[in-house]
Structures are given as C-alpha cells and as structure tokens.
Length: 457
Image 1 (cartoon, rainbow, N blue to C red):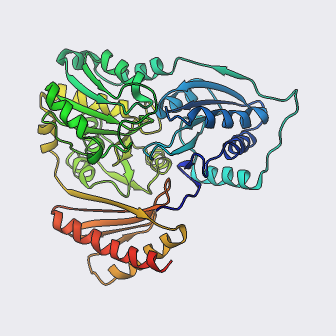
Image 2 (cartoon, rainbow, N blue to C red):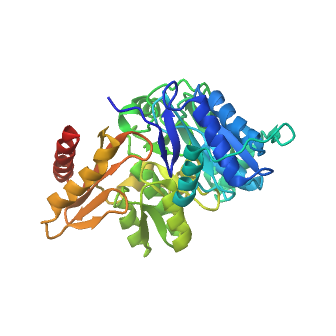
Image 3 (cartoon, one colour):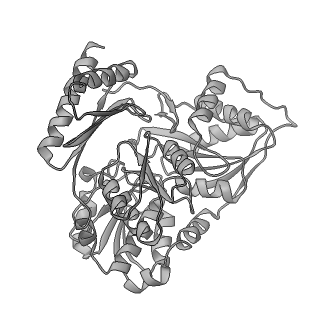
C-alpha cells in the first residue's frame, strides 16, 4: 500500500481527504499564497467536481481572505478555464482545486501566475517555505479581502478555442462524437464547444457530480465503456477527459483506444501543417512527436516532467506548441496549461481538412510500443533507484543518459525512464521501442533494480 504523504512540488499540492490534505493545510496554503502576493491583490479560484472540492476551496479562500487578498470564485470549471480567467481578469494569481487524474480519495491545490502559467519551480519552492515556516500575517477586521463570483468562464473558454480553429469547416462535417467527461469539470464546457463545432454528441458520464463512473486516469483499462459506445453510435471519434479536463485520450472510429500519447502527436502533426516552429514536451513523451516534427522540418525541445517545466521550455525556446504525452496539449494562444478542448478541436479540424478517418491519421504516424508502470516507492528510495539504474546501464556503449528528471536512458533500440512522481507517492517506469519485447525487457530490467532497492528501504 502506498504511503500517505502530502505531495508538495512544482505540480502543486496533493493529498488524501481525511488524511494529509486537511482543512487546516488548505487554509495555511491559502495564507502562504496570500503572503506571497501581498494584501490587496486578487486571486481567481475554481474547482473540479470532486465531492471534497467545496471544503478545500473554502479553506484556501479563507486563507487568502484572511491575508487581505480578494477572491473571485469561478465555481466548477476546468483547469484550463482557471488559467484562462486568471489572465482575462487581470488577476494577480489563480488557484484550482483538483487532483487531476488521481483516485477519488485525493484532492489538490494548483497555483497560477498572472499569465495563467503554473508556478515556476523557484516560486513553488518559495511558497512551500512560506507554508512550512508559517511566515504569513493575518489581517484584522478592517484588512480582510473581499469575495465575489464570476460565471463567464465556459463561454470565454469556448470562444478562445473557436478563435484558433476553422469552425465553419469543422461544422460542415457534422462529426458524430462520443464524449466521456467522467462526471468531472468538463461536463458543461465541452458539450458547448462541440455544439459550436456542429458535432452530434453522445455524452457519457456528463453529470457534474464528482462521482466518477470509472477510475479517473484516461488510460485503456478505464475506457472500455467509451470504446463500446463509439461502436454502438457509429461515431467518428471518442474523447475522454480526466476530472479537471486538462488531459485528453482518444478512441478511433472503430472503437479502438489509440492512447494518450497520440493526442499530442496528432495535434502537433496538424499544427505543423499550418505553422512551422519548435515544439516542447517532457522527457517521458513518445518518440512519435520527434518523428512528426522531423517530417515537418521542425525541432523538439525536451524538458523535465511537469507542466510548468514544459511551459518554461516553450517560452525560452519560442515554441509554437507544447504538451505532455499523457494527453496534454498546450496551445499558448489559448492557455499556458494543458487543454483537452484544444486537443479535441485540433483533431476534429485535422480530420476535416484531410478527409481522413482518425485511424488513417494514426496510421500515418510511426508506431512505437510504450509501456507505463507505477508502484509504491518511499520518497528516500527514489534517488537510490535512479543511481542504481544509471550504474547498471553504464557499460552499454550506445547508452545516453539524461538526469534532468529522474533518469532517462536512450539506447539504439529504445529508451526507458524511471522517476518518482510529483503528484503521488509512487515511482513510474516508462519504456518505449518499436517492438513490444524490447520495451518489456527494458522495463523489466529497471523494475528489478527498483524492487531490490525498495525492498532494502
């Protein structure tokens, strides 16, 4: 069983409700963020549909208000919605209450800069220090912040996505789409977008109750219902969101789960037919994006795992698109975070422009086998596993190492990475190769090393 610890890092804060993420912890982080920004500043807040969301949001808001910060509550919205509104409302920061793809017992707090970008690693570290040292001052009765509400997020978000797409062309195709919003934050805004794009939508799990119909991570084993529904409705595509609607997984017209890794690859292939430029992604994303970019004469910039790290690389290198292989597309013209709505729009326009089915578009991208494994790992064991894995592969002549994020080992026949998660008390191993047997062997080698280290911890 995974240890229950509060995860505090560049991806925000995550913990268990009734366990590590208490009302006091949430309030103290609100106080710390308020102290970082200063009295008189303004923060927008939003939450996904998790049943613990109202409690956590109220606690964070209480901390912000107590330090003299004004709060604009957006209600139940997506993570990209909070990012967008932070910028649109000229706020000094944003807060999203979500645990993204984590299981239902978790919730979390994500903080945004005025640009709508997540906190940098440096700022996240400073916030953690303010929280742990309790370096914040509560205002008296005359120095409390004021709270207001804003219900315009969904409409503004839909308009922003439509503004970068050919809505007329997409609408002319009258695509039939099956959408699985997992009873999460995408339930309202996503049907609005697809309706604007002329799609006929069969909506699965479309009630914003927070009672997840299946495990939240949009991976193959959790989406059999979506695959069946695509076949039943004879749809052209199936889309699956996670609870805060930043990640997107795709099912083709045959009801075949094509995988989260294809989301960014397809979006990149589409964008690079219209604009040329660099693309950024993390060290755990498939080589498919390298192949797609190379075919267009463009370059891929790799960054450590974590959305803020990818966005930092995008800004530093002037990238026109970015994202992560876990179903995340970052289009800086809309938001500086992953955005499932952008991913859907780009896939639909790619299909509309080419006249190809989704399976035909997928067939045009070089295929790899990617294996993803995760297992419980004590925090102090993760660096030991990384060091042992590097030592084990050091004698291979073709091995190239990148330790910017855990360890990635590139070999002529494939690559494998191992890293401690930023959001869960687990370790992740990712391996990719042309052949399944090669990917399995690479993953097995690293997992054996990990198990030996963890067994001694």
